[in-house]
Length: 315
Ligand SMILES: NC(=O)c1ccc[n+]([C@@H]2O[C@H](COP(=O)([O-])OP(=O)(O)OC[C@H]3O[C@@H](n4cnc5c(N)ncnc54)[C@H](O)[C@@H]3O)[C@@H](O)[C@H]2O)c1
Image (cartoon, rainbow, N blue to C red; front, top):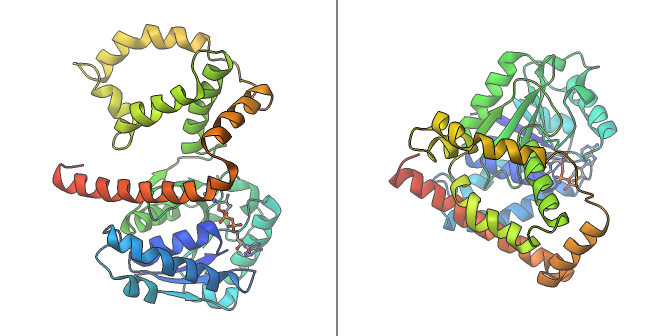
């Protein structure tokens, strides 16, 4: 198995460490802030037990997974022998540029340099590098040890062999890579989330439904199927004759809707004020962290359920 260097050991760095180590890789954590890797390992110690209780450590014990992780004192030490670097520094293009310049100078020629960036295109911080062909984005959904999908996004100059190697590495670590053919703002998942949010804001802005009812439509409606099928498989199963039959039946409806979906709601003004009041009435600000813990527990239960259901019923 491989050695992974985690560069930037905050929220996402520490989460990737769990994901990669649980697959049996050795993981070295480094951060510009000297105390961050130790803090990340403390956090990880707290999570491994719960993951184990939910059967989410690939049959390994917490101690075994933890044994694959270490804090590196220097970037050179972290990179020594690493075949995959997962970069998780702040979402600022100048920082990405600077750290990639260092990584490209220090890492061995065959090391893949993958960035977790949520929304910066890989071309924006790798163009100037000698080793730009081994650079790409691997964008996770937080936390990657519970959410398998990760977007693999090449820059125009990324070597296709690096994309394939990264895809295979992610699959071996239990991930479900989305392999993009070229870069675009929002990659795949935020583009789809963006389309849905646009409609959610519009429905509320135009007075068709309450905030709660929009949430019900996903939480107790569409997302039940979406938790194990994508939109294309969903429509293929929603008409007796499959996807073509679905389109023949419902195309006119979707075409009519499209007419009224071509403007952006004003996310920032009175609409946001109203949404915030609604949310803060349901969840006071000082309860946000508690609720995030609840969300992660629900996510863990769902991840465990999905694994079990895939084994017992089939993918
Ligand atoms: N938080 C999320 O939900 C999420 C999801 C997907 C992707 N991401 C992406 O992951 C990246 C990191 O986000 P985060 O939420 O983990 O942030 P974070 O603030 O928790 O962690 C950033 C870490 O980088 C360190 N750092 C700062 N400058 C550095 C440098 N020059 N070299 C090395 N380390 C440095 C900081 O000390 C900190 O520990 C961002 O690009 C973000 O867009 C975040």
